[in-house]
Image (cartoon, rainbow, N blue to C red; front, side, top):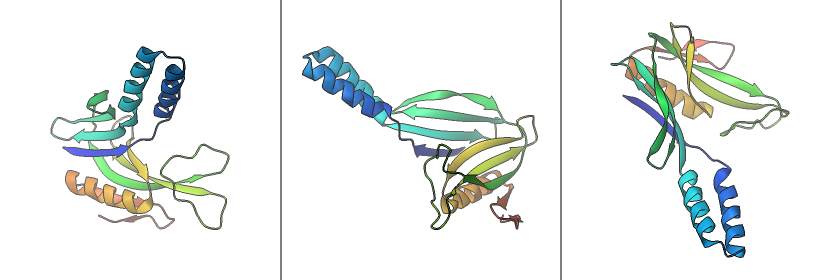
Length: 160
């Protein structure tokens, strides 16, 4: 089974820390305890994807400590894996992690997609820097015995 998982920073733990402080200032110890427990639970937040080719299904999930939220979806026949470049202007919300260029006003991020033959056309696997996404695409391609297309430049080429 292929598994990709990464830590996901969320603002909820900071909000819960603020609420804990407010509850403690007002001597509301039960509320402080509840918000502290929720803050700790939400601070260990991960996002990921599992692909099970034997059962032809995939799972996109959020994980808080040991609690996973997500549902298995049917997986159409995979064709290939692709790495694509996303150009983001400074007026949009920027995803993390982000690779900032030195001399332009555009930011670049890269993502790995599993191209399938069904109605969904592709499944977004992960997003990040070019080096990490290249390694992840090659790992997924090797695991599923399919080709990998580097779609990050104008010279689109097969790298596996």
